[in-house]
Length: 141
Image 1: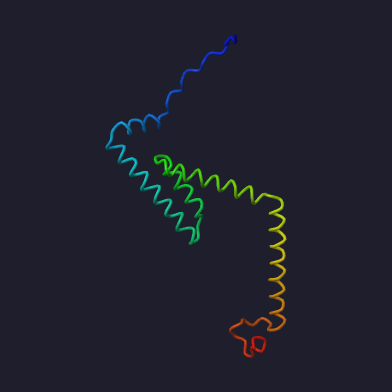
Image 2: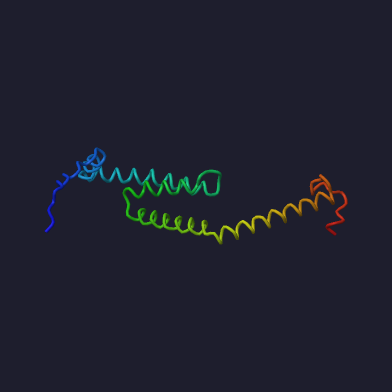
């Protein structure tokens, strides 16, 4: 039989934010307004992240932050955020795989060599003339 020499810790007192949220949850009207506010803010950030995927900006970060805001109140957002984190972890592991890194390094090097060769051939044939100002396009015919 084990003897407990350690005192059991008293339950931790809820923090201020938890007490505030519990007070809001007790009132149905305030709870609905709070959830609506979280939905509007989270959706706006998520939409901004989606827009930034096709325009300049940190799109992935906007999507993750928007989902994190929504996940504070909605179970479906928690599931989506969990799936996104799982997919990011898999992508990280795949990117850090030594064979994949070596393959990507070789492909990148070959692509850079081919691009340099194409640029050198163009400059050898036409000099510093842009393609739309070439007077005699013998190479193209």
